[in-house]
Length: 242
Ligand code: CTP
Image (cartoon, rainbow, N blue to C red; front, side):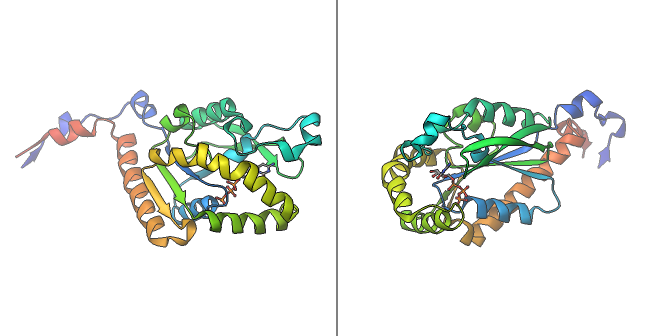
């Protein structure tokens, strides 16, 4: 068994640069399905990695003065409610290792004025109801997760959250649900479930699923890191002679 050391190719700077792409995870699912809980648990378990969370909510279009006067008629669950081109630009930059400025959306003013600086990381998680809608965004993802939670559970959570955290009236929450949220789930969100690599029932309550996902990400990151250090790993292996 002999290893020809002289033939082991060392990486050059340009070669290592080619392998700096982060691992991108998409997390989609209905509103209040528990996407945030799933992302938080993944981030917590990947504590030794640099992970950044990008929320699709950050890319909601700000409402004009006229739209603000009849906000109850605005469909926040339609793909057109988001600035998808900006989302794509941001994700593309992060994927290529560049820092970006991401808007912060305010659910009370319906506007996004402030920006937050996000640095490139080893893992990028993009979370939101419609993150699998645009094929160009999907193509940037290395892993796609769909959080599948029953509609009654989602509605119950939404009522609690929107009345407590967003200060909304329960009647308005129910009207919005039947007029926009439920139809948009059926027409736009549910059809993207087919793109998922993994479907998690019960969202953040499903610890077994999260553990398996984190294990898989770790394996992939390990392979990723080896490729970063030795882009010609296959050449090294082929120089082992028996
Ligand atoms: N939405 C709203 N008012 C706005 C903007 C968005 O009520 N000004 C609602 C949309 O109707 C949409 C929901 O916000 O249904 C999308 O956010 P959601 O996915 O519920 O947020 P997360 O906290 O990420 O969900 P999860 O509970 O799955 O983590």
